[in-house]
Amino acid sequence: MQVQFINMTARLIYREEQSFRQSFIPWIMLVAILFLMGGISVSFYHQLYLGRPYGNEPMSNNDLIWSSIISIVVMTTAFILILSGRMVTEIWTDGIRFNFSPFIRKMRHIPLADITSVEVAKYRPIVEFGGWGLRKRLLSRKTAYNISGRIGVRVIKKNGRQVMLGTRQKDEMKRAIDKMLNRNT
Image (tube, rainbow, N blue to C red; front, top):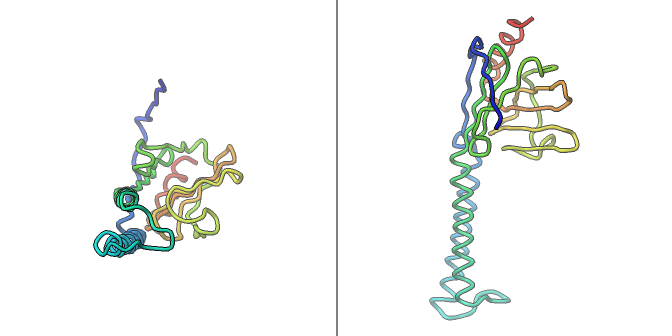
């Protein structure tokens, strides 16, 4: 069992909360689900209603029904998971805290003592990390937690690891980080 001590003198400077509902990703998922439902409807109509096998290598009726159910359940679960996604970034006087639910439920803390540098900067999510969401680059020791956009808080830790936390509030985040850094110098 790991015990985590919280610095009782630390104060919250800034808090930002983001969700995928504010981005374009749910719309892309919804379009994909609609296309899936359309394809399933066409195959059901041809094979189950008209009685004609659908496709070049048609499935049995049972396989068609079960594969359709599994596809709908998987896509709907992914859609709900994305809609429930939420990222919270907090700047405290003693460091940065964040979580990325439902993937990271507990608040993670990067203590100020472990930070080599921190900056709010523009970055390229697709090129640097392969897109949005929770992204890890093992060989480069980089991790990104982002919902959308191309602005983030780049934290370089003393152990060489880099963490990118996406933000939609560039100016407010810059002020909060300046406040965090200047208070402890």
